[in-house]
Length: 109
Image (cartoon, rainbow, N blue to C red; front, top):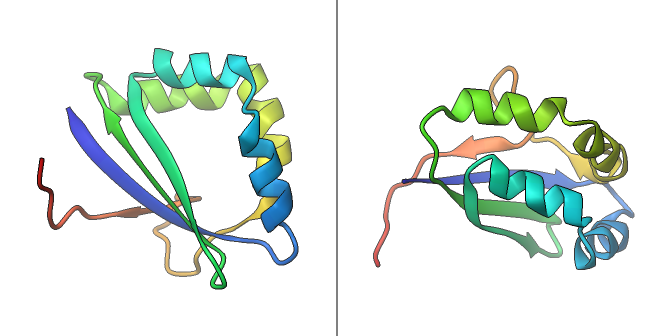
């Protein structure tokens, strides 16, 4: 199991839309997340900075393949058509990232 964390901004004026979308995430998306071996997935919002922090546990054996499966899924592409306009990536993210991945520096069970 691997814990992961990521951060992204929310586009100006899109906080309420992002919240609205995530009150009722489509069942197909929730199923896809599970089929891609992601568990305990949580997104936090920090206002007034409008930063989203996501954290989850990856329980698979091939993260890149699972993420490719997620990206290729037509329902997920439809979901992203609604969520991506709400997001504002950090300028400091690495090339190829949308959400900026974070290094875990402490954990306590």
